[in-house]
Length: 235
Image (cartoon, rainbow, N blue to C red; front, top):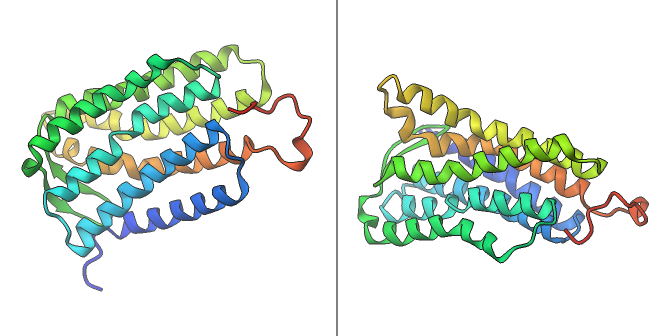
């Protein structure tokens, strides 16, 4: 095979499928775990779409649009995951999905402006409307989730929740690396890295998926944990 474009996405998607299968088999299906598995599924779908676009050639406007519709739910789901870790239940929490829904409605109207501009083995670059505004609304929940985790870790006394919090914080830092680099480069006048930031971040998010898998298994009640008070109840 001469064309290796999208192969990196395929490999990551395959690993994420394996992670999900293992979690479905071995993990307990409580609220926290279900949310974590949903996030992994969102990442899996995105990587699969990148492979379809770059390797199979399904790069018409609907495909990058579908990829953005999928991945735009990642940040609000991270907020929901954090809230379930700390047993925070509030109907207003659903408002974190509002920006994503607004963008989806708008992008549906201008779907023909979505273009795959280039493909490589590891990442894809896109051209899409309101990129800067999209980025601001996209990364704000991730920043908020990171701040919440840092504050909670400094006060948390429950050993299990503390350990899960630290793993999630590590994952958040990992997916923030390409974002930080992109903003630094943006100030130098280079715009190319901004165009591929979604794809690159989702490659880094593979490590986040591994972190989620660890927390889900850690939060699953095993035979030796039946009476463990540190277990997160129905979370």
